[in-house]
Image (cartoon, rainbow, N blue to C red):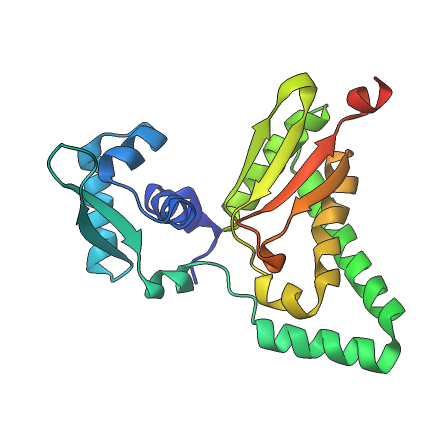
Length: 215
């Protein structure tokens, strides 16, 4: 598993983009990151040499075949590993021995600490700015997150991978952590409209700002 600095590098950004896009050409990635195609190819060559990327020839319309790159199974170890089995066992013991209320208390405390950590790094005075900053912080920690700004000030935070996916399958209460982060960190009303744990393609949160609530 790589630390957060890896995901801030060009190589780390390429890996997370390929995880989100499933496959892409060097030109696609160069356009996404504003880099030269040759610079991206050099990174892809290094990733392929290390066994994290594979290439295949695909035909896009009538033009000549294009090389597309995708991640190998070994690339998964680059992303944060949360030791799901151990965490599931701990949460199971808490619930069985001390009750669901105790588990909610533990997860609530974890959510508050996470919110405080992120809030200390967010300086924007408004909800939209804080959501954008939170997405950046999540990406720095290996979560491929982005923000979609819609009409009339609507905001949607999307997480394209979940480091707790296997844990949430057994203990959906773990999702309360990100809800606490959104509530206390960005100070907006967040409603989850899609979840990876329940078969969705992403974890998506609609966030209502105080201005939108007032209107």
